Length: 128
Image 1: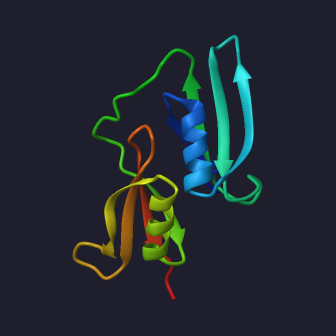
Image 2: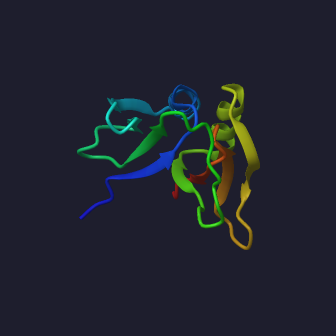
């Protein structure tokens, strides 16, 4: 078994695709409209789905926002250098909500960025 994807509901599909591709460096792997169900799915990731986990963005036509609730935590991305990654994300218009630095009660370097819908993404430094 393996994790295939994580699904997020988004209010502006093109804005979200732009964030995940241009700010976080993912590629749009596939996208399909489902007119009978009035929704569109877009899958993004860092490589082919056969070998990598993807993020599925679901846009329900006519819905422009969601209440994130209290159950959602975050998506985690491993990066080579958290400090450099946060600077690159800021330079591409990304919103950093926790600057790079050691995690609370630990030494792992982390940071948090927020996507256009308010979902949090944790950046975790690669272990040596």
